[in-house]
Image (cartoon, one colour):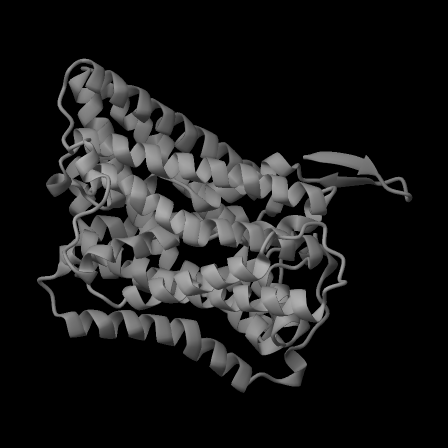
Length: 474
């Protein structure tokens, strides 16, 4: 953080664009997603690059223009470009997806932590549920201490728990192959693309859309930059490069050492480290790496707690969409009551792990519902960006995305395609009832993503509209 002196003689603190890039990378990228694509071996490069071109780049460029012209995040963009109700729906979807995101993220934390104490616990649903509930409430307490605390912890978690372990994983992988050990997955040109087994073979790409989601989230902090017009695009460029590197390289390396049939969607990263460490007779490092990975995941979670709920707080108070009990803030300007209410629902969802026998199945279902809810927001964001460019062409923008209409069209088409594919049961879960799968995903997405915000707007009262506290805008 840097600071300068204002006319009044008080120091105004700014966030550096590098810090914002690290916060964004922390909220988007982690080693958690690597096992999902490592199943495909070398083809995971294609499966990561495709959604990056269709979704990540349009999102990054479009969000850069919107954030450099309108402060306040996605609710401001969609509210200005479409309507205030649509703005509320957009920020609600951005917030609501975290209800499903936290259980899936913390399931990964639980499985990783299991390798420190007892690897067999990684498949124990009751253990996973207890860890999810405990860590979430601790994170709520940390987030209630303010944005500065969250920024420091999330950036530190990215370096300690993602960049360092990721680099170590890559080094061990090349040494492993250099010793003449065979790769568990074929690495020849014939496996650059995934085998086509019908529509179900594409379903895992939906998880990659979720992996890239969040590039726009920290735009709510753009006012903390000294020169948002120049610094936000730079932060996004750095974040995009780091995200691609973190996702692609570790996934390939994991495929070298862990056979796809043995990969766990929640514990695959630790399986790879455990395999490498045992091979090199340094198994004592497994718990150390486990702690580092947990630190990264928790740093990312803290960033998510700080971002979407803040945007929902601002529009909830300004437009009166939420009851006052949810929009009250503590002395640090943090929407603590909102986080607590979200925690109650998160706790109930965490219990799914205790009652669904296959932990990986619960993880996958929650991940898909998360993506479905979030994609609604992205469609609204892309449409709003086009309307703002056409209806407010002279509005000051620190950055203008090249070929904005084409980028928004590409992002919208990709989002809709991913949304539809999300209702197709993946081949890995083909033994289950397809209709039950569709109904479960549809119900989760419909209730949380559409019904709840409709009820808030339908029954809102004039007294719910209150002044936005100055500390919340900081």
